[in-house]
Image (cartoon, rainbow, N blue to C red; front, top):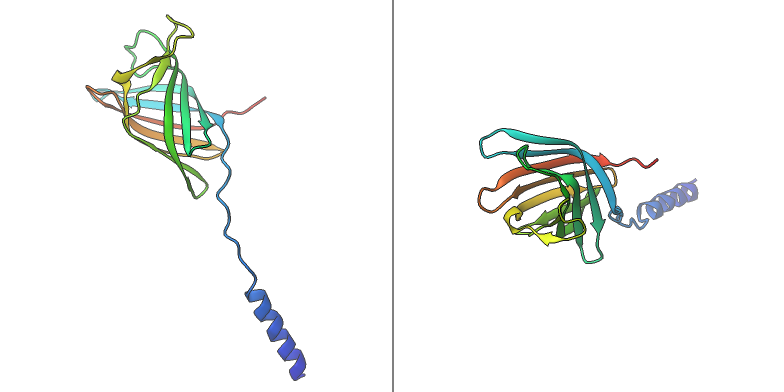
Length: 162
């Protein structure tokens, strides 16, 4: 009987010593997200753009490029920017995805008046950019603009493919 108890205790001890490998961070893929963009205007009103598509390309150097498609930041903007790209956003692994951060990023954009021409937009410089990216959701918060920085937020879900 003592041998059986001793063998059982040894088995329990061996199971307790099993090597527990840390869970690797999730692999977050480049993706497109659809959601709500909100921009607080200088007069305190809030401009919202529903169903905005944002594409995120994950780069090999711990950065991501964020591209907003057909975006406006105020009702008074005379046209939608065809694309607005925020390049080189820093990424870091966090629980469930990637954190996003950046400061003083000069975006580039294309407009309907000059299709295919990518131009820098220093007046829309992004500061204090933070966010989280998962394979299901994207959240962003930043200040947009140099002269009168406006708070901008985005919350969206991965675009469903058909």
